Structure formats: structure tokens, C-alpha cells
Length: 451
Ligand SMILES: *Cc1c(COP(=O)(O)O)cnc(C)c1O
Image (tube, rainbow, N blue to C red; front, side):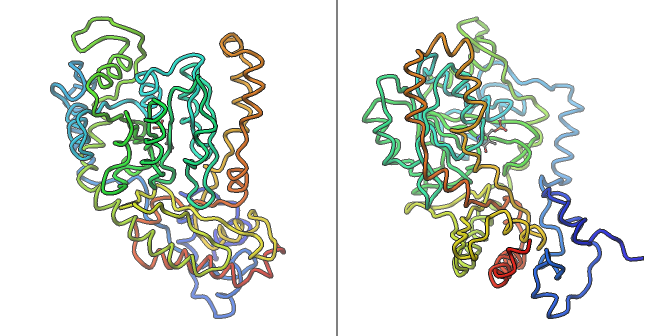
């Protein structure tokens, strides 16, 4: 009996990245020409019937490293300071710093923790304002709120999806303390211009480079332009250990302040010197990360090259506009491959129908980072909490809501689509499958409204 896995209804139910490929890999049948041209969502054959690369990678090297760390019985980090002393976490800090060409690295339990630590270290506190883009992961914004500060959203550039430097200066007030730019999708934002504006106004820059491991702008790694840069090693990121993060800096004082805050306010000499929480990375996480540093550069380059080819193919399809790179971008890290879907080129059909068709063709995607963070309920909830009401006057919060408009981002939230990083780790055929699937949908645009 033919398994039911590949039936349309069953297939459409499989929405997650992980299960899609597995479903498509069974039930293979050589497509007939007419069937191949028809949308899979309308009963035709899917363009992609195999899984893409699986993520995170499970290699014998990783397994060996993890087991060795486990058997050592030493599961907590050295407490002599960042990069000082024995153990895998310190070894990881030294090697990550060397890879990025910076003086200090401090590993943390997540990038959210690194961002909170970094904002605290540069002096962000209750009553302050921090400038941030709305097209990012919620952690970027939560880190500001955790400091008791107000996230002020800078609208994005519609072509690059990044914080638009031209929109920063009108938002600066006497309360502004820092800018927290994000290299969204792992592509460099206009970081040199942002740093220049920050210097002019004496603001700190904390880069959210959670998605931008080894992305380069004018040959310099993202995360090394501002005072502190923060990285994520969460499971979906380009190096992964489940949860995990790090911050990097060239400033000895900021490295020490960060270390103290991340270690319960204790200095490397074990004196209690200030406010602190417990945000330490453990040795088993570093055991998973260290072997991945060996392959990171080659993998980032591979994603960059595959992304360049995909962008070229997609730009030939009317109404599909890939995320644009700023001039000066040496290399993108491509945590995501983003593009805009312009419905006017698809007979006015809403993005959701296009996505339904794309899913049925076997291509994984997400729209998660187009969440309009400036408009989400969590923000209102936090700002109306007693603590925030005490720090911020009613008048200031009212003015905040008026300033907090990001029309470009609103449009992007309607148009944007992301492909996950692991699809870019494959062969040219994988990339062709993605482009062929989207081209097929474009050719069938007159049928999309039936979905
Ligand atoms: C993943 C991510 C974070 C948070 O990283 P965690 O390690 O999961 O805490 C922050 N910012 C951006 C842009 C991210 O993609």
C-alpha cells in the first residue's frame, strides 16, 4: 500500500523545518511533465523531495569532545577571569577572541545574557533609552528592558532590512545612552555609519551579532565595531551548543565589568564588587563549541557563496526581491536568507498563499523575525508594570508611544520571507531546487488564489 505521507493534506500539516524533509524523502515517484509543472499545493509534484542538510551537525569529533569533558568531572568554568586559567570555556574564549581579532571574549549561557551583561557594562540603567531596530529577535529588546531602560525603535531600510542610520539622529534625546544595532540575518548592517553617529553623540554601541559569526564589513568582523559585540550559540545558530553565547570587546575595563556582572558581582580575585547575576557558560557547552570553530570559517564562506548564487537566481523572478547587502560587505554569515514577496507581481495574492505553495514544494522557511516588535503586547505589559511606571513619567511614556512608529518595518512584516541557514550548506542542486520552486510558483501565479 502506498504510504499516505505524501498526500496533500498530510503534507500541508508538516510545517516545521525538521519534519518537512523527512516527509518529502519518502513516497518518491518520478513526476510526469504536466504534474511537474502544476503547483504541489494543487496536486502536482513537489520540486523538492529530499531533506536539506540537517542541523545541528552531529560528528564523531563533537561526540568525542563532549564525552571527554563529561568524563573529566570538571563541568564548571575556571573563575580566574575571562580567558584566564584552565578549562574548555577559557580555551573557547581565547580561540574565539583570536578568530575575531579582539583582545577579550567572555562566554555566557546565552546571547540574551551576553546582551544584558553588555548593556549593563556600558552603563545602561533605569530611565535610559537605547536605540534598536524592530526587525530582530525579541531577546535584543528584552535585554534593554532588563536594564530598566526604554527600547526606542529605529525604522529599518526596506532594501537591506537593517536599522536605517538616517533615522537615528532625530530619535536621540538627553536620555539616550546606547545604540544596539543588529546584523539581521547575519548580514552586516551599516555599522560604520552607526558607530560614527554614536561617537558624535557620545553613545555606546553594543552590537547584536547573534546571527553574524564571522560576517565581515570591509574585512572586519561584525561584533568588533562597537564597544561590545554579542554572539549566540543557541541550537539554530551557525555554531551551536543548545544554549550559549559570548561577548567580545577590546576594552579591558568593559571585559572586567562584564565578567563581574556575569559572575554574581565577584571579581576574578573573588571580591564582591558590584551588582551581578549568574550567566556563566559551562564546560560541556564549550566542549561542543570548540570543534565547531575548526569548520566555522569554511561553512560561513559556503553559505555566503550559495547565497550569492541564490540571490542571482531569485532576482530574475518578478516580485522576489532578495535582502540587499550594503556596499562594503566582504562576507555575509547568512543565518537566514531573506527576500521580499511583492504581491503586485503575483496577481495581488497575499503572502500567506504564496507560503502555502512554497511549503508544498518542499522548501522550509520562517517569517519569525518580521514580528513588529515595536507593536507587541509584551512591550505594553512591561511599560505599564509598577517598576516602569515609577521610573518613567506618564507623559514620557505617552510621547514614547507617539515616537514608536516604523512604517517600513510594518511593510516588511507583510512582505518578508526567510529561508533557514542550513539550506545554504548544501550543493548547487539544493539552491537550484529552491529557486526552481519559487520560479514555478511565479509561473503558476494565476492559480495561487485557489489556495
Ligand atoms: C538568537 C538571537 C538572540 C538570542 O540569542 P540566545 O543565545 O538564544 O539568547 C539575540 N538576538 C538575535 C538577533 C538572535 O538571532
